[in-house]
Length: 254
Image 1 (cartoon, rainbow, N blue to C red):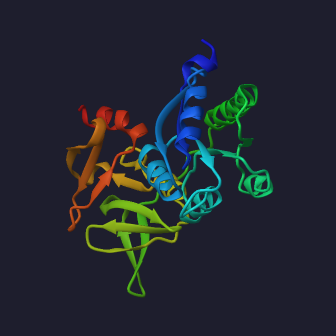
Image 2: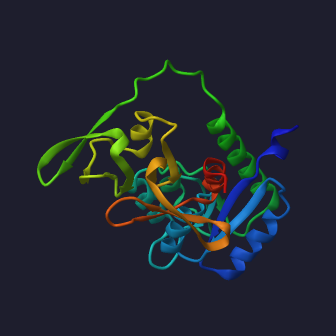
């Protein structure tokens, strides 16, 4: 089978102009590899939708009220974690340098031309496929059984199996264990996850790593999604991302 036919590119459109958003959505329907999973109208909504939907690709207007497109990418990068690929869509060319400094996949000028849009989608498709290609397996890494947690100016050592979940916010990772909650010295969720038992710790969401043995309840949520109620003292509810819902059903035979 051809690569183009095997993998949909989940896509989010963010533009404060309804007509521009509708036009782009209409044009994207001509590309079978594109699956539009949502639309937003401003920068803050963009961040919320990216967190909830975890799209592969975001078509992002630059000039929007509140938080502009450049600000969206900056804020997401400050928080840490993996990001979607971004294509800026704007009527102004003066933001191009900043867009590519932020590693945007492409920069499209309005009014959109179908041929130019096709080039952009092909570029995004190849970038996404390259990212998904398996790399040569690294030698097995010893899994950590102990983790450092900093809390109230003290350094606690906890058993990894006692960690209930970890979350990242503004570039800071918080570990919640059975007896203590505090900050980790790891910089990213990916880095922490690589040190732990993959059969126990699961990336339920872009911002959350959970211990599957510490899930207390699975709660049906909006549009066939789920939330996890964890076994910590606060009974924290953690969202399961759209792309991880299938994995959850496999793990728990839902």
